[in-house]
Length: 206
Image (cartoon, rainbow, N blue to C red):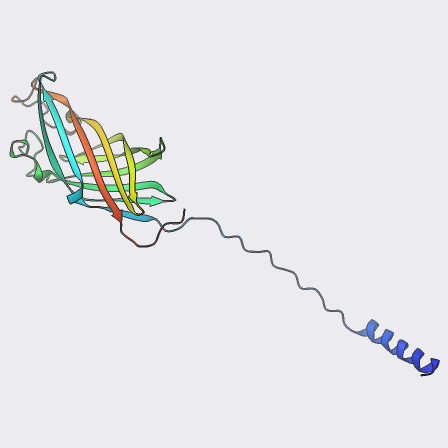
């Protein structure tokens, strides 16, 4: 091939390179960052038959004592990221002993249930939580705070145990009664064991 031919090829190639449109680079969209909002909450439903609520009342300055039980009607915990976030529990006051159902005491005929609804929970130990909420009993709602120990039997199966004391006067129980005034002490000791299992199959994102 002659020098003239080579020169022509080089010239044509150079012209083509110069005149060919150079593609404009497309802007790369910034990657979408999703806010970490966590997975769906877990709902643990209380099994009333496997749960227990016991009480102990004293009188005459602790010299006399009486104990008994009351049944859980229903309840549930809500968890997210392995943390307790809320709970609602209904107690069947009709399961109390007959003598406690009267109008001077728990007035069960008018108020057959008591309800606790949590307003806040915070971890205070490896498996211990401080629970705050409102207890509605005998037609009166009062705030209470207590601690509960949480034990996991298996994934989705939780046992919670609590012990605390309620002041009966806050809910008008035997308050000013001629029969009990000066006889029944103010504190009622409560012990609770709640057995709850996961309602849904999905495990909340941890």
